[in-house]
Length: 439
Image (cartoon, rainbow, N blue to C red; front, side, top):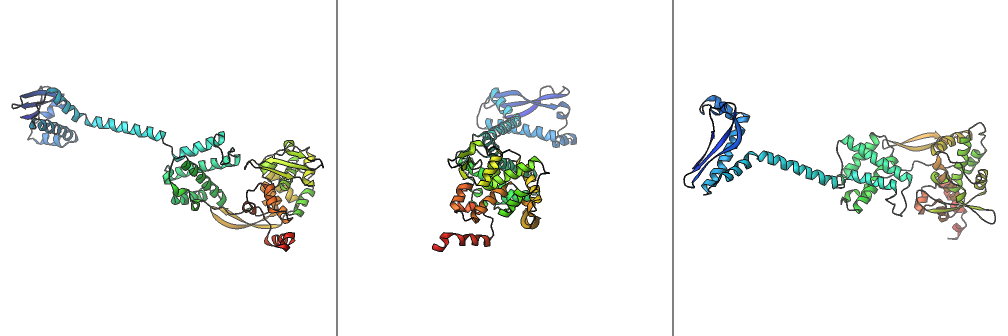
């Protein structure tokens, strides 16, 4: 019994098929079948003992050819040795299974790659979830924990973290998924925000903490189980860098400043800013007060009633006479101007009012805290109005719970961040509280 390989026509020139000659007298097998492997008849007919043939057999082409023939021979002889009376169809199956093995494996590899691509397309990744979370927040199909729509400020923060997360991945040349988010990632991402983006501590903290909020939602929805990125220790801490408020005397100076040579925008900005002081609201709320927010009482007093855009909380603020006078000037429909315009104009008005006391503040660049001194008017912006209102209410001895009712803060701890009086002023306020002498 034997398997040999021959050319059907040894004298034919060019590329010719190799045939397998399979014989077993015992099993009565006598098969001649093409392997469908082509070989140069000139090379095949070389003397087996000659150097030229040996070199051909060692070449990449020859080595592959004879390895395949050897594999065919071993498999067919194995079947014969085990008493299998092969038919031509059996031999065909064995030969094709060997010579087309690479093609079959390549096909399997491609099919496996396609399967993985399809699975990957279905699998929720961190990048996909961030995009989905942002899209749903923008469309209003995803709600806050209170069941309200996300505020424009929160959506802005979501866009910020999405864009910087993408930029970080590009810089690192790696796509980060849920399981990649650990304390090492946090450190590197924070360093990227400091060194590459030149963000201050609070902006970087907002990015990281917004990402944690997204990761927490993804965990709750069953997309990952990575608890390393959920704990309190993972959150970034903010520092209080907005430490100024305006005194009652400074507010009077702003109202009395001669700005007759300034634009209407400056006059509007001053009045809108003062409304912010007297209501102690965010600019998104005090820059939009209209007749629909006014409740008139029988005694002539009025109450500002509005729903805060950021929190969704309804607040009711009794209007001081100063606030009432400003609203009456505009027939209770305040003009609306862009926040940046208010910021620019109120600084110029405050400069005109000579609010130029040097103020030293903490600033952060690239994660480093430093001290800078500025004239006070340079530090005034729209949020100064809210801080000023809350602080002046406190210094006037107003009950902190009532202040929270006006500002919309959910707790005294949150309100505390807005009380900008120094310790001596606080002590005076405490001592003037009638209840202080009774406890």
